[in-house]
Image (tube, rainbow, N blue to C red; front, side):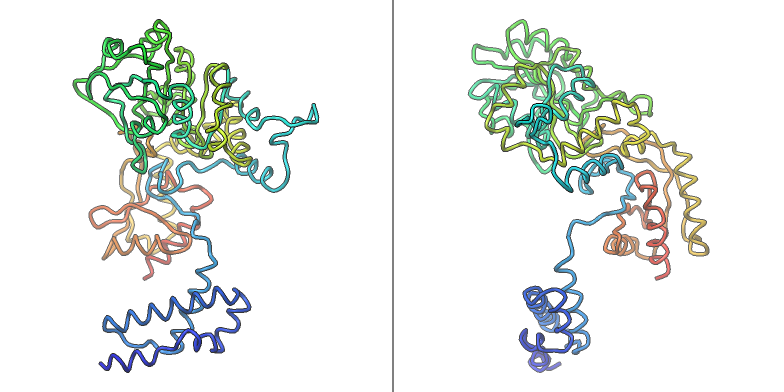
Length: 457
């Protein structure tokens, strides 16, 4: 092949912009976008020629230019059909939101609101009051504060209440959360000095007592919401820690990580400590996430003693970590599900955890029947769903899966991911597996269409 000859066939960016196909694109997307698309197409085709390919021709270049220009103005964050069976899938955005939460966020975001305006007094108010009363009622705490996420909540509490002093924590609780962020690093950033006590698998109340000195500000418990230690283990109870902390005039900080307002045991899952239990046990501050088991928008929530929350509100870091109006609206609407007692019926995370496996099997068989003859390549098999998202480690829920046999399962799954809407499934031993526990009812027809198209190829 004449390499230089093939390269000479490539149009320059300027020449490409002068083609008849470029004019409509410029009018639709603007010149800057089309110029950027043209550069991408020329560079891409040059690379293909240099690796042994041939010039694809003017028609192919024009088609790629149109596709690239359209791609440059499309959002990269798009909806995905989660068919993995992982309910709180961190990479897929964790908790899907209820219709009421989405509506509340849309209504507040589409216009003005009383975010920081006291309608009764006719003067400036506080953005934090909108969720505080609900959190007090639901948890029994004296006060509450919202920040942007739970790592921010822990950072704020330590920065405000323990900076330049020591905090005693079990070695077995020095966890790493998503994205490689570690509790010791968060504590170091706050200015607090970490005092590790006990061992990885066994930490008794006496270990905490020996770790206390005149520089100690607080004891801290970090709940293992994203891992589990089994076997020869022992840990001090929260009640023991609270008693010791208050006897020594120290603060007791309880980081629940995920955090739940409902008991998980009725849904076949080991009991997860609830926020209310921590408050009743006497923890001075309890921190947890808004977007995991609570099932709302991403946020960090702090509940506890009024005097401490008041200090947190005045700390400069609170301004940097504060949440916007749509998040507050979403958190408030989500908390109202718990106030009304309809969280299991309305919050998607709890709907999915409570979903009966036989119902999932019925949905799977119905979808396969709807595929007609293409469904001959599909079977319904038993499997397990996961809660995921750093919540309820090791807890599995029985489910039924649609198993699709494909000549190349990896390629089949990739094609589903790259289509619109994107479908993310599991690949195991040459099969592509779909768990309808995490497929929203409104998405089932879209999944059927995507499967139909994929199976026809």
